[in-house]
Image (cartoon, rainbow, N blue to C red; front, side, top):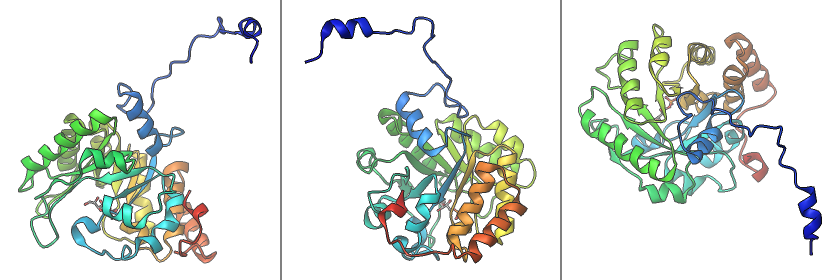
Length: 306
Ligand code: R5P
């Protein structure tokens, strides 16, 4: 039994030290509740407020995408190098070991396939199920200018409301129809609408001209999609320009998992995003890791997942 008198004598309230009260540094997020900030801090590194998210949710509308035929084989070895994993609940439960310690950004809209109109989505996850899989954020597609623009904005609002009730942030994903130009005017419109309606961060595309204005005009962090597979140097250059011009990182899929050496590529992308390496130096890193055998080894050990 502890000695109560002794405990009292040892109390120290550090009367000369003001209580720490730092602002939360992630763009546009300081007014959020503790749980929201804590989940965002799992996705965006508190050191630099940047992230390398690995997007592997493509199957939700396009089936077994090249590179994602077997998530257990090709994606598990990449998880240690990602800051977060963007994935559907079906793929998560069926292929990803629950021992992973990386945050999950849960694909939460769906309802169409590549055979039909892409903007025709609905909310595809109950918030209770998102909580059950320990999601750190919810992801919802928004099709500004699309056939189902109104419904997709409704999905965003519904998911933001549900996420806010449980302290789970929402990532809006700007889906761009084939008929729309991915230019700064469009991306500025789409990303700003998503943020105004409550998205805590927004996934969008990089554009060569005017991206800095897109990023500045969006009051919450932007992460960029990689898009179709590019030569590695071009993908690294795109990531470099995006973060240089204000993006808070990437949510990259095909330009990582469709590479000849995905493990080498995700490390090169990390060098660009977290160490501000130039695309040239990051590409050298890619080549050296690739030649050292950093390919897509099988997922063999639980320790590889952390
Ligand atoms: C958007 O429709 C989905 O989230 C995609 O799975 C994701 O954006 C694709 O990422 P990437 O373009 O880098 O392959």
